[in-house]
Image (cartoon, rainbow, N blue to C red; front, top):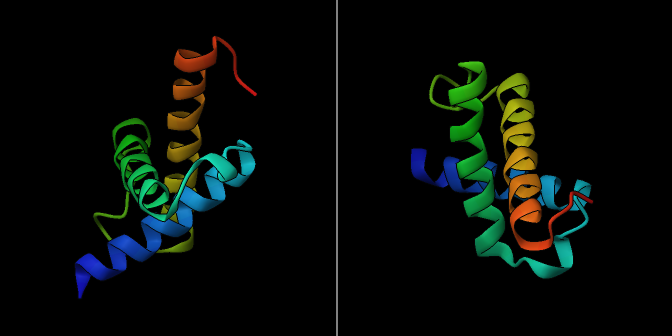
Length: 83
């Protein structure tokens, strides 16, 4: 059951980050889930808070922030600028 929650929360965090960064049309469902989960890992590394402990509103917000950071880095690599 835990992996399903990780996938759902990761998908929501990745989708929300892609909407904020305006890359939603370029990404599919699978990439949104991957971006959300990697964003949660980045948030855990930077802020020390992630969805490892429990899924709360704040851990979700940190996961979205981590996903936005990931998408900004990918935009810098691909285009040379952040949108």
